[in-house]
Amino acid sequence: MRNLLFGATALAPVLAVPTAAQANEPSPCPDPPPPVVLPDSEPSQESDRISVSMGASVVTEYISRGVMFAKEVSLQPSVTVSLDLVDDNGGLVTDASVFAGSWTSIKLGSVPPGPAGSLNRFFETDLYAGVAVQLAERWNVSATYYRYESLSDSFEGYNDLELIVGYDDSGTWDRLPLDNFSLSPSLRLVQEAGRPGRKDALYIEPSLTPSFDAEIAGVPLNVAIPLMIGLSDEYYDGIDGGKETFGFFRTGLLLSGQPAPESLPGLTISAGADLWVPNSAVASGIDRYDLVGRMGINWGF
Image (tube, rainbow, N blue to C red):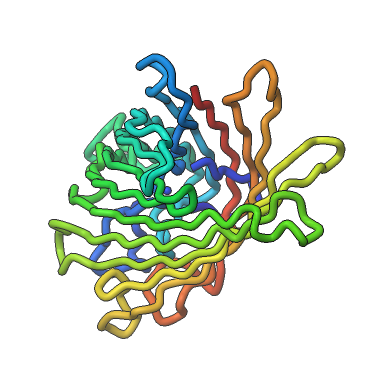
């Protein structure tokens, strides 16, 4: 989403698209909110099956799926409530949960006056609900319904249906001289539904996120380097008309850690930057590249 080394707000997965961006003014499609972490299956009381994740990120720009939606610094708070459904009984389904939540993008910089008045800063508000399943302790599958709305009337509301399949390869690379190294391969598919102004698009995002644990200046941190590309049939408008299949390449660096693991075990702070390299043939609102900084905080309980 943002580009600049402001810090790095990734805790996660729109924008007022400038006229240079997509001609059909595609509504925002943010990255998924912070991944729903399946709770450890510890048989206990019913209340222990409910978990809450609250977070907020600050990004120096709002870019999503390789398209610039807001050049202003933005605050992006989110909350997700999950209910654990299955305890690990040694079968194929080793964990499962249902979840629901909300994600918002609020412009913090100077914003021109608009018809929404005091709500003009509230560029996007998303509501989502879904189910997450863990198979054989390695495969993680989630299906999520999203409703995108804009309190500032920056775009017309519509729906997304998202499927994410990821593989937990932790422990596979123990011979490497990196602590807890993993690649975390993932495939994200998003099908639009009821998108105003054009045909509904299918969006495809394969990714790898190499990560490892390290100690920097005596502070234990997790270091992650996301690698992904964005592909679609209808989402990317070409500069010269028509559609482009390849939208962008994205990488970056994210550092995250727990400042008080004993007294506040659910608190995580992150910082980093995203490097977006768009397809130059796409009307993305981005030049040759964009560096977005991010800082974030998340509390799970």
